Image 1: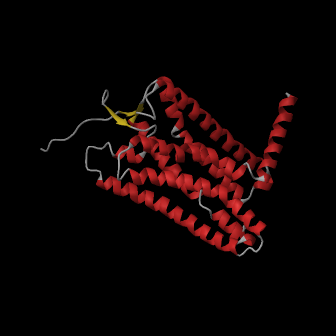
Image 2: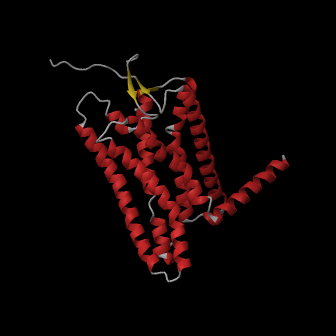
Length: 283
């Protein structure tokens, strides 16, 4: 009978972003504020789109779904990190880590698809079709603030070649496919903008895409950087820092980029807030 490894891993050890107590306090305050801004900002978008029947259109359905996914996306990682900093406990149960990986993978995939530029492609290129179309006291240390798949694979005692192949295949399929769609959409958008005769028209068309391009660039550059760099180097600290950009910063920016600059959303928010103010005054 061949010897087997019967070690049971019941908990993992998340090292977080820093072990300096003073810096941890700053990180706690920073991430708490970013998390609250993300949740409140996206929640306002959802409430606004639900409260105004004039916003029951495909583009606002897309925006409300993006806001919901962003809230869930940050909630899978940030609250656990904040609890760990506050309680000075860096452990996460094995089952909890698996659950976190499941929802992280699911939600980052959804973010992938929702960040595609299809709506802008249709709006600019086909404007007339726009409206119709994770055994104590044994721990495994993870140099991260959440159970990111590529960091967990590196902890395995067995050969991880197949795991890495599956991981990169899925990442390439989801990320590459969505990125290809975005690049195709923008190639068409640029082609259409070049046909606009007036400089003011060109500027207006480009300005509608600039904010989207900045968020997409931040999301994909940091996401691809984390996963591609992990195949070459094992600089876990840099990887964890870069992960903050696509897992926390991007969802925080989305409501400001996509919705809070929109006149219809602003109008619906004013109506909603005014209605709630009236109700509060009645009580």
